[in-house]
Image (cartoon, rainbow, N blue to C red):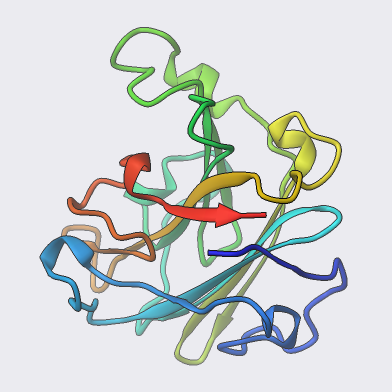
Length: 211
């Protein structure tokens, strides 16, 4: 998909399904692709991505009858502690590293930089090293009457760049979700990327983002 240029201004209609700021961006619905081509979660949502002068800019609007998190500080394992929107960003197939950034409805963030997939299991890096990364991202989260919304802007410096990639450059990304209702036992998983298994690190199956 083509990466649309968006402004750095604040979203005036935050909480809308499609804010005006992302009006030219493609709407990406959350699906359960590993269960079938048209399989949808019980509680859906939509995500958008664009490039601003500041960085890569995401917005997601999630339907949720019970927005919840038991986390109390940043960089806890948010995906084990309640609802999260997860943003995976890989700056091109030739670079092994990728960011995984989580936002929770109670306005917390988990910031992870993997030097490559499987780095912890292979002994390349420890969890403490990966979670010590600081993307410099800014966020905005709001709980709504029927769910929650989140915006994430990851600065270009997080990718060792001074500005947006050159025209024609291709990155990969996915926006994924853990949705807990009524407790922490059985989260519903969904993603905007066409993943063939319910594993969010399958970056070969992420969406291409063409600048």
